[in-house]
Length: 119
Image (cartoon, rainbow, N blue to C red; front, side, top):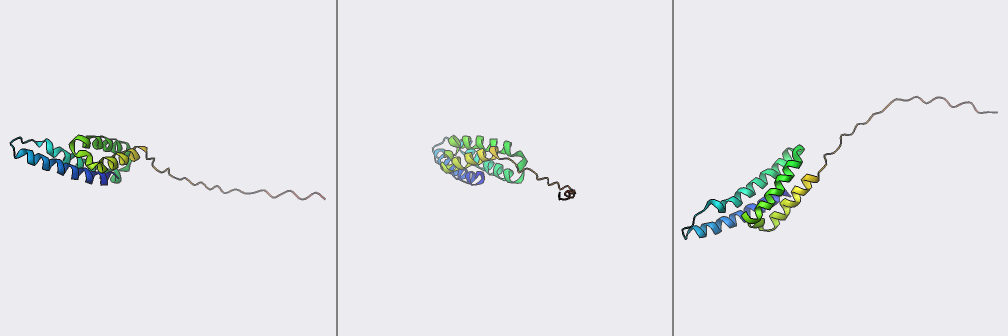
């Protein structure tokens, strides 16, 4: 979910960058408008790291939530869809529990013979 949210955040960042290009035509140039694309790329990177290194799920989940919140002013909230997907992906990563290793122990036991029946 975080990866998909990152793609929508990049799209929102491209929209903000286009707005910045229009504003630059009037002489007010700023690199602030490119931050939305950077937030989207970082969200995609965090999503990839969630898949590649699941042991750091708490860190990746926290970063995904922070980047989703940062996308609100910087990337038009990832067209709302990106914000929601990245937020849900981060929360799911925080709550994920790794599967417990199963230890099967089989002990060989001998069963004593039953006592003879009483006549």
